[in-house]
Length: 494
Image (cartoon, rainbow, N blue to C red; front, side, top):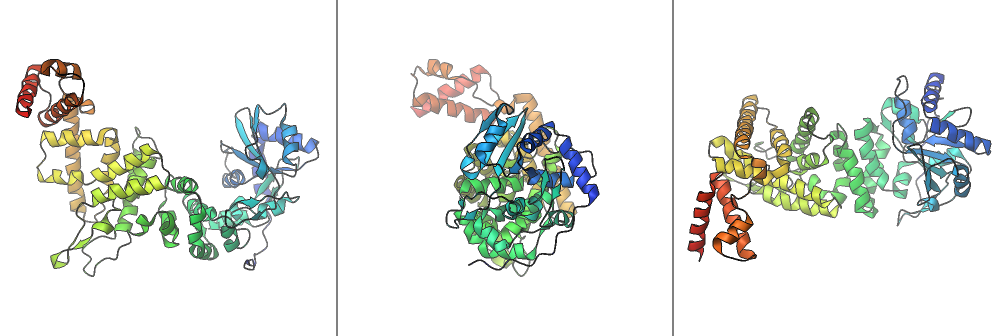
């Protein structure tokens, strides 16, 4: 039995100036004008809804047009009637969502998703709605996730903005509420809880206490959602400019315990002498600093999901490796090794692409390698191995290592930055001399077989690896030197 819905204050009318601005933004799109004309001529309502309206209201007062991308539209026309009205006008249509009342269309590069008014009930075991057509725009808006997404703009002649649940006021107040009871909304569709997390990052909103309470009590229900959907929403959260508050909500409500428990586990207690950092807070700071470096790099793609995942998760091996040492010290020996394995396991479970999993795991594994450099122990060979092991991840590794310095001791922070500057300079000098990006043995496979008198097989690979190690250790060799070293190795091996 669902809880009684909270008493909502009456929604304030949308100010005429905002109505006019939104109408003007809609007018910018000839496709939406024509769509409205076609449906109105056939006697149907049709409205722009969802994020497009929200973003148009956020843009009110500016000259910004509606953002590009898919546009969500709702109508009282049934799906078969929608298909008939699109025929001869849309360049293509698709009906993969037609069982849920959605018809897709593309018109001169604009993609539309047109959905019949719905009055669904949800099967709370499978998350699948029992689809029922509705006849009321307000009833359709009532079933949407948050009030800021429960607004509509008529594409008919009047261009009326409909806001029955106070979405505009919430948008202006930076407040996140549900149209009805939050507990009912999230029980219907637990993915909405992750969407709440994302909107905190995307819109800078603060969830109402009722929303936070419902998220906390219903967090275990997130286990009903497929890994792919969870991963999609979590990634969208990370790709915003400022995801820290959203991640705090993700962890504090218990959602992370369900789908990313390694992140919650970083909230280790600080010992009484404060001898080690709060690893969770440190990780969020590393993420913020990595985003700043990423956005400041004109040669890097931004937002960078791989870098952001690595920054957030680089220390997830610490809880499993924490040891209390004499004199109140705490150690995390080999946490980068354990962390790399945990990253691979968790990101695989969340159905991230294999290349993303491997890249984040490798960055986690390598993020501590630099810390031996400051003691002056690195030979040219060590620098070559650092570059070779990082491969095309080297620019991201540079950013991750620099971001990993969160000390408040300015002198120590400056010393670490200067040391890494020195390493990057050394990498650049060796790269200019030796083409570090493409380190290969000084002899190819054909010459190896010719010199050793062997056929293709495992022995060729073994000899190739010997020469690769030699190249890393000593740098480029003349062919004669490389041949002599290979023959000497071959004789000793035999």
